[in-house]
Length: 481
Ligand code: NAD
Picture 1 (cartoon, rainbow, N blue to C red):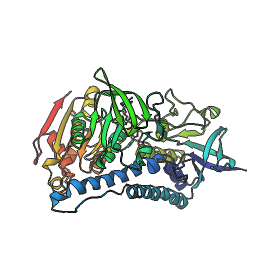
Picture 2: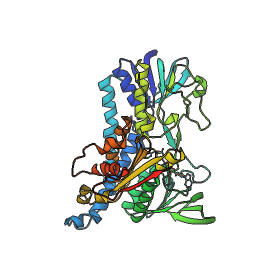
Picture 3: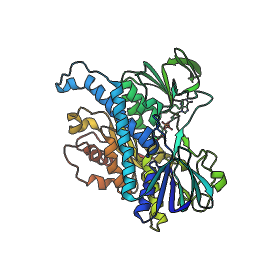
Picture 4: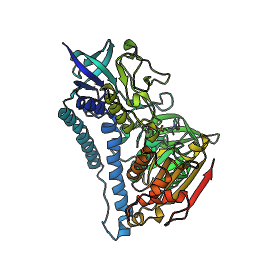
């Protein structure tokens, strides 16, 4: 049988499933093929984000944070809880249940929107055809007017330096499933995954060392914010070594010995577990790109134009597999926008307002340019910042670390970027994204009333500080190139 669809989406992660749902909402007959297999052998939609990334890691970040708070912070509130225990199996089971509930939700959304979702692998056959193979070996060929590649990415394996062995040397997925808290934990890479997973296991008791090749911590974040992040994480016990390039790792009976270079010297450390978190690469294995004429760039990303068209007619690609920010919400937007464009609507992604969040404590979030990036682009900026220490709500919730910083164009007053570190900044960044989406100036935020007492007042104060008007904090501001 050669059943035909309006759209076939290969990959049911954060880029693929929204593309499928939006296309179905717009009247298309849609098939979504997803190949995800969980470690327990079950299948689920949602890709890395729901099954092995964003969602399970946030579940563990929450659990480990509560464990840490119960031990170290409740006493300040006058709450005595006796000895705080850890049932790691229960914590991991809860994490699994959270993931399952989310990925099960995608199945329900497919049903509600009349998307046909199937588990198995999809392969591009060219000429508008897709080969489907179910996990039990049944094969089928389908055809479609539009074929969307949304196959995502996979962790980079440092095959020559520290190859994954699934036992001692693991990727970010394996690091969500340690059966016991490692005594000594090593992490290669102080990127987003490194600091988030380092926080989880360090809070649960692992002595954690993060080895980062670059000399700068979080170079993509405004350095005033990044420096505060490094200070706070170090204070919590994370041993973050910058300028430390890992040269090799060897697993043995007593641990994994890691050799690294720092400051021109070679050193070694022995860990019980080693997480390799050095980035992700596009996943196009066995996809049939060559047969279908879908070109990849030199780094393996699927090449697309501004409308997500690949080099093969009728084949499109969205999400991690096309590169750019490897973030679930960027993939979601691309999937939705592509479906709307294919249905003849005018729709586009605004890549200037892609927010980013790191779920450490304090959280780090940003949108738009850092002061360093704006200056490097030759833009004359004015900046203002305000600390959470000057915020009443932050004091009430015992979370005063961090700050909000505005980077604005000195000539037009337009907001170029907002970078923050502090309590719930993952939620506060939404205001900055909306403001920038509407092309707001700093004055627009200054003139916007913010409820009291809320953490959002620090966003207001930082905007006021840009022009020296902050009421509740010292006006920390600068201007120039
Ligand atoms: P990353 O690119 O954020 O960080 C990898 C780090 O590893 C870099 O700082 C790099 O300098 C370092 N590194 C590379 N080789 C090294 C070596 N040999 N020795 C020491 N350091 C080395 O990658 P990641 O943390 O693996 O995350 C992958 C992707 O997933 C990113 O795009 C990230 O944005 C995304 N992600 C996002 C979230 C979130 O939104 N909260 C969470 C997890 C992952």
